Length: 167
Image (cartoon, rainbow, N blue to C red; front, side):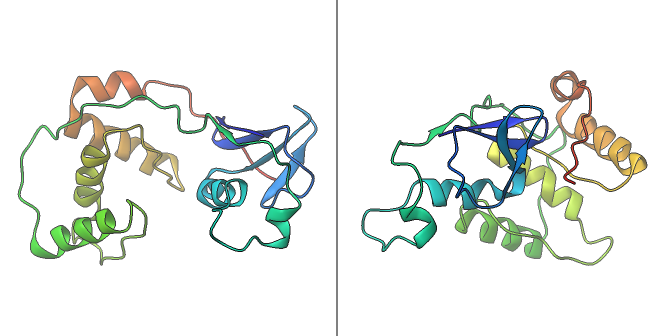
């Protein structure tokens, strides 16, 4: 099975019918899943030999996973303005790092979630997907990222935005 990132979703080539979290896509004759399911699909496709397999894992194809979804370029990003995070922001960033760069940040309005996200993006040093519900917020994030990381970021983000929906 080959896992690739395609137009904002995960494309699962040569996946067995038992693949979880995915729907058949007639346009490409392959299964497709929402991108946030990457971790779950990766765990499903690469069960640990020391763990007892679930029924779904036991019924999947025995071929190894070819993971091309993480074939993104490393980026050398450093925020244009060096601001020291507040204590709770630093604690949130450390908690995110301690949990393998996974998790959600829940803070009140005006507490610096965007600043915290800029710090996390700089730390991760890879392409980052920012999901927003409106065009206005999309434009706001584009301006924020351009201001935070300069022209290098602006060149990287001048791409066509693609919307993929599941029916």
